[in-house]
Image (cartoon, rainbow, N blue to C red; front, side):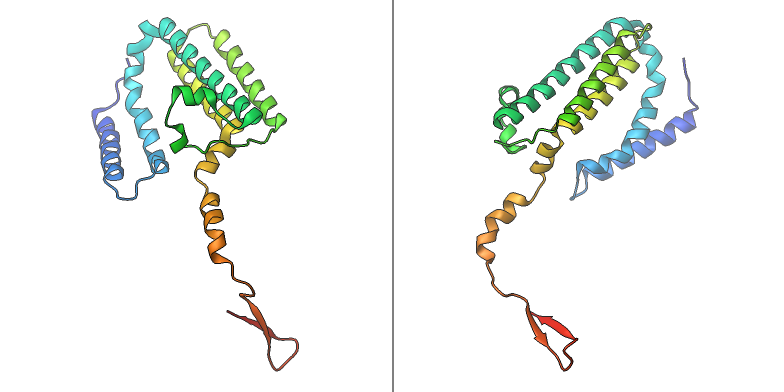
Amino acid sequence: MFKPQVSTYAIVLLFFTIGFFSLFSSASMRDIYLLPLYPPLALLTVPFIPLLRGLDKTGSKVINIFFGITLLIIVLTWFNLVMDGEARLLQVLWSDIDNALPLPFALQTKWYLFTLAMIIIILWLIIIKKSDNHSMLLSWASGLAVTWSITFLLLMPWINAARSYQDTFLTLAPLFRIVNVLQPVALESPNRVCCIM
C-alpha cells in the first residue's frame, strides 16, 4: 500500500482544510472558487485507492452503468430542447429545474457538435469495454471526463443562458428609451468634434 510521509500528508490536509473553511465562510462564495481545492483533494484520496481493489470488478460496472444513464439523460435532454424547447425528462427527475435553468429554451442545432459528442461516447465505450483490470479509478475518471465533455458540447448554450443578464436587460430596456443621448458638437476647427451627454 502506498504510504505517504506523515508531514507531506499533513501539509496537504492542512491546505485543503484552510481553503475549504475559508471559501465556505466567505460572503461572496462562487462555485468556481472551489477549483484550487481539487488537486489537494485528489492527493488526499491516493492512499485509499488500494483499499478498493477488491471491489474493482463490481464497482467499475456500477460506475459505468451510472455514467451510461447520465449520458443518456444528457442526450435525451438535448433532443428535447432541440425539438420543442422543453426538457421533459429532466423536469420529471428534477421538479424545480425551472429555478436553475431557463425553460422553455430554443436550443440551436449544431450537428457537428452532436457528431463530436457521439464520437466521444463511442470512444468511452471502447475504453471501458477493453479494460481488462476493471479498474474503478479508470471507470470513474473516464466517465467523469466524458460526462463533462458531452454536457459542454451539447448543453452549454442552455447553461450559459441561466447565468446571462439578457432577460434582465430586455425587461429594463423600455424604461431606458433615451433618444439622442450623444450629440456631436463642433468646435473651432471643423476637424475636431466632441460628444456631450
